[in-house]
Length: 231
Image (tube, rainbow, N blue to C red):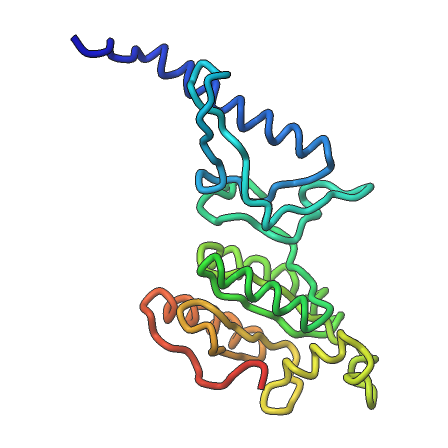
């Protein structure tokens, strides 16, 4: 005769023990003031061992989106979001990450590309951000499964003569100009199925439409505009 079929109680106990292993792993990293940021089944490893009743243990892995939480911060201070399918539906819409240099843009672009997502970078003044920031977060919530997002705040110092040669933030602003012009507010969308291309738009109505068009194009494998972002 084969092994006895597992009862519902036995199965429930095994699931509970597996969940506790994951919880203990999270408890450990939280004690170190670290937030994992992207807990999902792909980021949990099974390791064979005879030291547990299950015959294996679960290890929390892939800390690519992890952040260290500083004094006075909480998990809501983190500007990244995890894999959209596994984000709690009751979770508040995350803040939009603010970029300060070309290097930060490249890092976030690479991260989005590695997740198969597009990256929408909004370019606007401080005043426009105060007015339109909530609208942008609401827009991005509609595309949570296909896009990451960030924002570049343009200041007067970024536009000063020679600033782009001295200031990393001004360099980023200069590189994000559209056809040599700085249009505020605007958006540049990169990544997805055609990582070397980008779409652009200026004004809130056009931005909303560009986000919808980019998500549609990416879902159907349509190439975006053929102008390189970093020309």
